[in-house]
Image 1 (cartoon, helix red, strand yellow):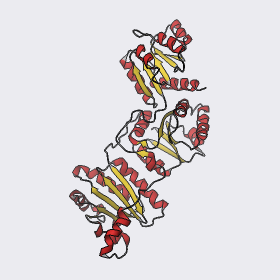
Image 2 (spheres, one colour):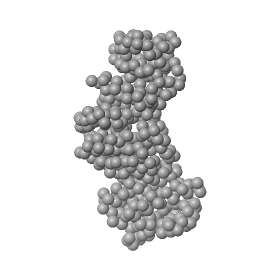
Image 3 (cartoon, helix red, strand yellow):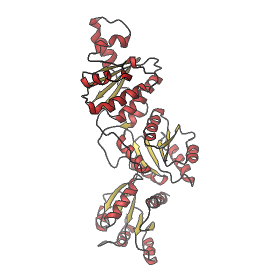
Image 4 (cartoon, one colour):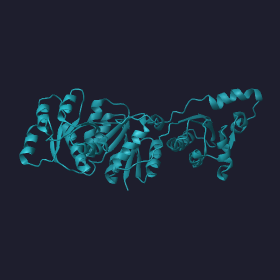
Length: 412
């Protein structure tokens, strides 16, 4: 079983991620805070660390330097979340085993995909586009849904509501689910059931204090047909549930104003950590969170694909070239942190590339990846400035270890 260590100061984020990863058969350990983070790291020796970057970049670097000083921990990959940082700082993280840095708000899909790539696990993710917002007034928590029911957001809802209850010391929370912008059918039944089961798994929440505003016939029929949800009330007019929510007598002429003030016109809750941490939009950027950029130069399409897959698992953005000429033409407009090149290619050879880059300012370090095993070929490549020489084929973990080694040497 794969092991993940989450180092984070937000209990909400940690608990949410633990539930998500545990559902995919991943063992998760959490340290809420960084005081004992290094000790937990070298004790657990996880397959991956997910860490919220401290406000101080110096503190982060101290932790990372301690990590790579331990021979057992140095190769453990890290995915970081944190504030926006400049490209120079981001590029410096690669040598410490940081494979991704996600500035907040994080694209949830990209974040989970990166974890899956690193652990070599295909995670299930609900990518449906939906809207979920949470409001609060005293002991009333209002949850608004729109478009569709997204399972990831439903999972997150449990932790949002729990945090609100604990933070505001709400003894008897009353929930209003506004579902007026949903048109559901029998195919949504499993998500609707998951929604109510998730909400009712919160200890402080009682069925009789859950009210649903909806005019959708399927919602009525669904609640009516489930014995375990029999105390949840569905209405199509807020006036029908106002008295049970506010526990006061309300004059008819006061109802519209009270609905506006107590239920509809609230500021969205700004949770510490998780609301600002995740963006659930479907729009995806394949380079989201990228720490470093690698050029792959090889005339063999299979080799390029294998290298790209290996490097993607460690969070690298890869640019593929099937000949040396196109790679050299791209050097001025691209900043590559590393290049992996073949030696014997039609036209511009690996030797030609090395010779050109030897006199090119700020050229990236080069790893030669070739089938050539002759001693004179290796010596010539290294004498022309290659940082390392690997003989094809190699396992992905060997390639990744060499990339980290070369990036580490580059920054010394």
